[in-house]
Length: 528
Ligand code: HEM
Image (cartoon, rainbow, N blue to C red):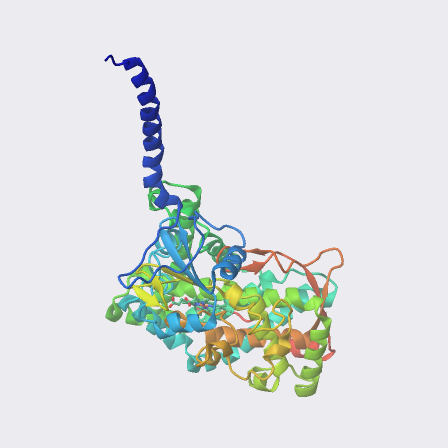
């Protein structure tokens, strides 16, 4: 018997080659798959991750709320998604939001150490970047003294004054309705002055004060750099070693915050040291309790800065969204005018005490916040331990997103959700802060200020500012878009906080009495 070796090798080698090729392809795939595909994880009781897209994403850059809304419809009110190495769980249902973020607050209240926002720019500070724990509790307690609803009553006259100046500067610079204006700068200065007074006891006394420009640019740059989904570097850690232009922008924002707010704090401190009079506001408290509370220099600067970072683009954004919406809703403006004329009259404008007598104006403000929440994803929370919820496993170190866009367009809660319809809030007599505490989460007005232990501590301040600005704008003006400059209600600027794309409108005085009222107060300098 003779063996034909030639035939054997011809038969065996192709198989060997196929096998080797298969191994060469499969091996890297085996190691790379977890980088590109979702992995199945379950706890020891067999609870698995909430369902979600099969592949991992590097970033969701523009309009991420649209992708989240699509996935929520496809995978349900609790879905999960992998962004590189980071697992996210997305909540799109009010009861689940309450069960997890509120009831299980001890597990669902930390923050991810986002590279750009929390490491490069805020360096773990400014409350919003602090992980859940003693430092966060301490910083939140310190600012709560200034921001609590009771403390806000002390700022009522300041906010009334700033809303007066807002209406007046729009009147003067818009030449009584003759000139179209972009309201961004005016709304920004209104919100900035309120925050400067609460934190430093000072204000800018003209629209051209360089501090307005500096503070607003820093806040907008912060919003642009810190989207919860927009930076690849947040989800692929090795990239954090590579210097990039974006990272340099982040460092510049950090340095800008320390320089701008640090130099104001230093001036304040040297006045205190020399025995001069300084107002009794946040910065004084921070300086006085510095040693006792063990605050370092960056803690103080960032706590002062967060008032403008957190409070300015959001509050001014809602005022801008209101002004963007109202020209295309003359029927709603007409109902507002009717209520204002009937309840307040034409001889004076509304003030803080009128709020609960003007339900339609309150309803307009709540509806603007529903259809144009500045943060469609709030600020992601982070889990500090494993948790199982109705068969779903949510591991420790999961980022948890409140999907406000889908929550705010829930047909069952808000029939005809894409229509701007203030009427839906008539009969809701609660403030946003009270509404957030309701036992039935389905009854909550909206989720614009987040939820649970991390809920926005600036809520009482923001509500007052919005009331004064919007009720007085409605009392004072009629609103006109320019025929050849349509105002977009779809597009926006900002990756974390969102403000409308630049637009112009004309604000025409509605009543003769406006000019008399505006004469009652002028710009004043408040500094030290
Ligand atoms: C209309 C205006 C505002 C809106 C829509 C808004 C919205 C939010 C949201 C969604 C969060 C995240 C909540 C969460 O994690 O669940 C937040 C947190 C925060 N906001 Fe506001 N905010 C506004 C005004 C303000 C003001 C005026 C201040 C300061 C005076 C402020 C200071 C903060 C701070 C410090 C945090 C971090 C809280 C924490 O992490 O514990 N906000 N805000």
